[in-house]
Amino acid sequence: MKIIILVLSQILFIVGLSSSQTEGKTIINDGLYPISKLGTDSMKFDSIKTNEVIIQFNYLFIEKTDLEYSQILVDTTEYVPLELEELPTAVQQTEKKKKLMFSLTKDASEKLKVFTENHIMSRVALVVDGQAVSIHKIREPITSGQLQITTCSDNACERLVVKMKSNLKQ
Image (cartoon, rainbow, N blue to C red; front, side, top):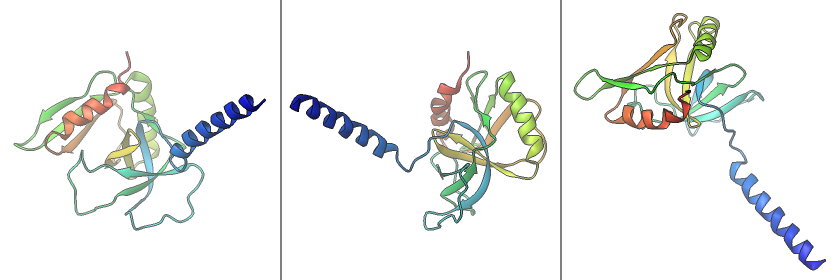
């Protein structure tokens, strides 16, 4: 009887450890999400809805701008999954800048078309590994399924390609 109680207490301890490691952090899928609000570490978002998640902006991939923000509140109700047709390619733009070009699968391209039609003039975040790696303003519907990040800092495109490999659909 003592052995059973000991085993059960160890199981409960392990379960408690694993749940506390993820407590407070919602994992979201890689993809394109509408932005509800932008903020900084010192800013607290008021009235977060159940379909919204706070994620971090990762400046390792994109050069900092005048609009510095570190936290982004995204709406998870509607998003475009980052399902890649093939590995992204980095194209040299200037001596220190590259752009990253990638193609979505047919299904993801259809979702992108509808998503961009519904979010004209809205800001969206490209999320990879639970962090925003770029922010874009949708000016017109994207019907091709082709996307690009044009502000990769030095070597950032290569690091982002490595992170995006898990989204390759075959």
